[in-house]
Image (cartoon, rainbow, N blue to C red; front, side, top):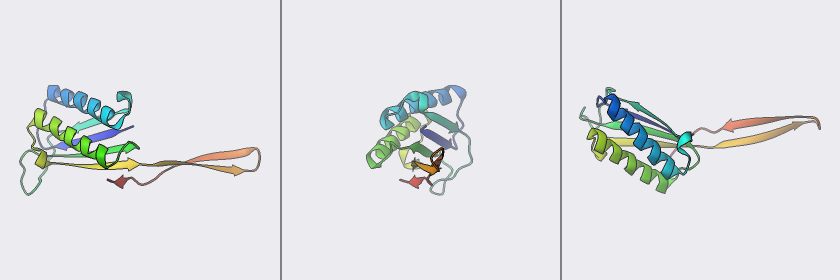
Length: 129
């Protein structure tokens, strides 16, 4: 499930938040190639934040996904989310920073005798891309 957490120091009303949620959901799903029904977007507004030494409008994001990320996808996501924030909140792209976490899941099967077995799911520490 791709999850995009957005934080901004800009106060955001309910209508604008709804627009951001809709636009970001569509963008993340399309760019990563996963259904919208798997995408979660969180918008945290009015967060005390300083970026580059000022409290001018700014935003920070974290996108976490099980697969689907990589340099070209991340660049496209970064640009698209920055455009959404520019259009909806007037946050300049130079005042937006995003981190990407590509979570890898490994399934390990352990067999204890012929009749008993267990499946262990390991989630590796996300790598920052």
